[in-house]
Length: 48
Image (cartoon, rainbow, N blue to C red; front, side, top):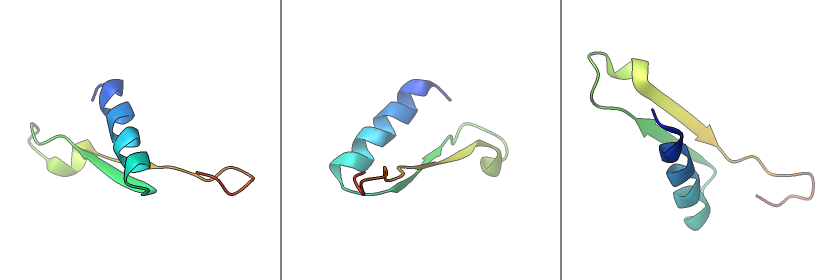
């Protein structure tokens, strides 16, 4: 998957105030091979 999709998902997560998201590529034979989980971690001051 392209890095642009990572950036797009992170933007959506921040906009919706969510911490966890999934990128799924449906154009593969085995779906579980192309699922990527992204997590926004809080910094030391408690901000996201």
